[in-house]
Image (cartoon, rainbow, N blue to C red; front, side, top):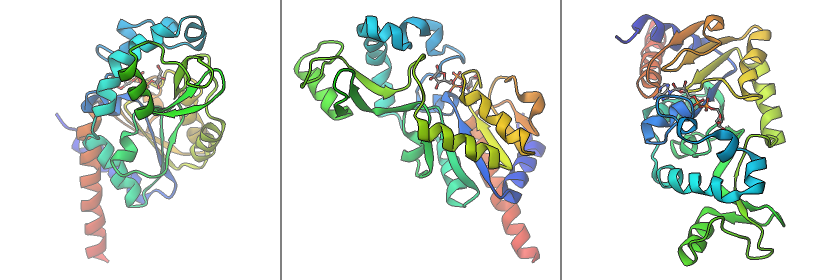
Length: 261
Ligand code: APR
């Protein structure tokens, strides 16, 4: 049963906000066919993160990480934005969302038309050489793998292994993105959190910056999170459905306000 009252409340909070931002996780991309990490059948259920998603294990044996990348990448590269991404891009377009902070590496927010997107865990479309820091595009790496199917692909310059520019466990986050996200969270009067288990620091601490300065949380996630009881509104349902309904309701309220003027 869709919770109309909460949808209306969330729409109203966002419409009346001045500095709202969104914080998204892998849950907003599952409806685009990309598995999440800790939800139903998530990646970390099948692959141990300490072996497949950790910088130390990458350094000792990059082929493990690349075996996971080879499995997940095709879905990632062909994925299209779903109604949840489109709804968030629309909220940014309406100048309601001032930014989208995402833990996702799939660029689907940008493909949906969002512009101010901070990718705090990097992005799958750039690759870097672990030796000389040479940078490669996704197409260059796909071409290399087509020519010589060897994992990990190695650098043309120094033969060191290549790594997608995504943040592995044990690596630091991109400095500008995380500082900017903390500043935006501090300033936010509303943080719309969508599709994240809020279980990985430092991103999972961002909502606390908003709460500490009197901001409110709206959480849309199909499972409970540890911040549910501190949120103004919590909707346990699919982001693709709920975010679209919130945008629809917000437009209705906006039109009503304008006609009553
Ligand atoms: N609608 C709503 N919620 C969903 C949907 C959906 N369609 N699909 C999945 N979810 C929920 C899951 O139940 C889960 O609670 O989204 C949440 C996704 O949580 P995680 O899989 O932990 O993803 P995320 O929060 O982004 O993880 C953070 O952990 O492993 C690292 O670097 C990785 O960026 C990732 C970080």
